[in-house]
Length: 105
Image (cartoon, rainbow, N blue to C red; front, side, top):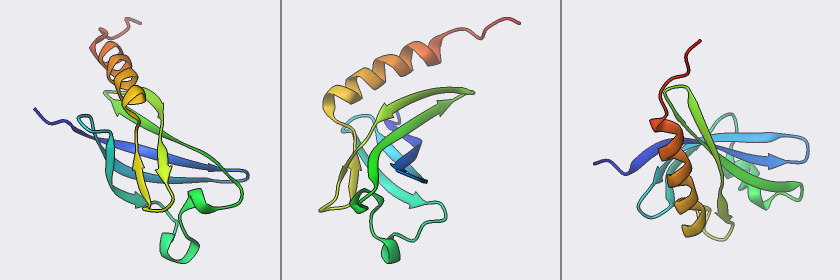
């Protein structure tokens, strides 16, 4: 069973949103392989280091359904992760959402 899922990450700044993708480990909460869209982290630094940084969130998508969740950023290491309590809640919300039968139109 694969416990790694692709996610979209949003670093929210006052005036802009920096979007990236990554792989979330549902076992540990660690987010790996973060790749920024139209953002040069080497030249501009980590979005979370910016003075106008507000928060980071993640989005898990499956068959047209979505679950949003909070993401923590360690500015010293540049690593993204999900806390154990947030991960537990995310697993429950995702399981309920992704196992619901499709809505009839």
